[in-house]
Length: 178
Image (cartoon, rainbow, N blue to C red; front, side):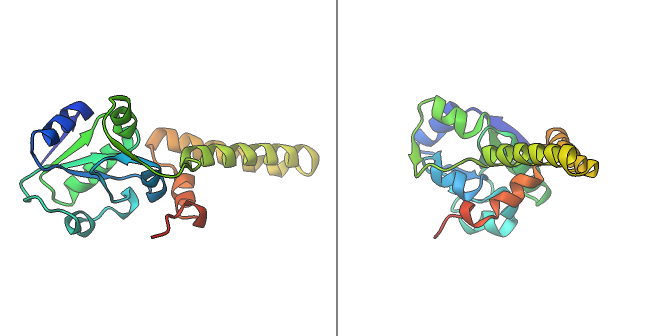
């Protein structure tokens, strides 16, 4: 069981050489709809399971699974998860969709939306301002709110898991209608 990385150009060359590539994009459906590598299929990280991966797989089990996200971090998490689920060969696309697009490789574009990262930043900033104002003008105990947001941001930075982002991804405005 191995986890490797591959550059976007190298992966595109494999696909261009006639080899069938099973490219799984692990971002949210909203992010996937906005832009994704041509030929990728969407299996969000929080829904990643053996069944979900095998459901759309047409290649033999001996062929590697290629995972892509926005910049590479979620792809790496997905690789670890798939290795734990028993997949033998998983490959993370270095730099993710951002690098894929920068290389000038073909992408599918859909309607624009506010990214989860920006949504998290807007909500975290609003909660910090609100808690600070309430702590100053209403009661000092409100200072707990910006402290909790700061702790959440620290947790996200240390673990690369954003709980607020996971919650926001499930909100109705972030769901893609089938």
